[in-house]
Image (cartoon, rainbow, N blue to C red; front, side, top):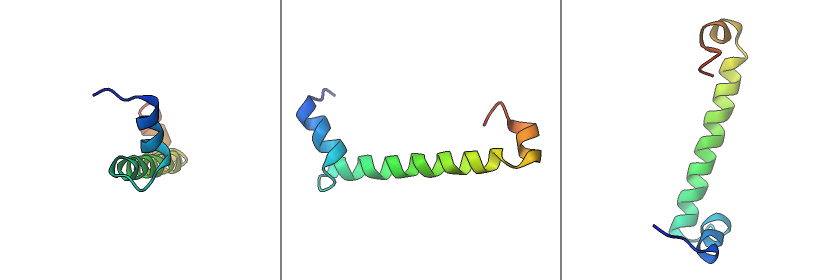
Length: 54
């Protein structure tokens, strides 16, 4: 699948396209996962066991 600059711009910055909506959903999901991992890493017992993984 090959994208040109215009198509990438539409996907990233245009939320009204199918690709743009999918991009937004994936980005929100990854942000939430990142926040969850940082929160888990701040718990001492979890940090001791899983610090390398987190």
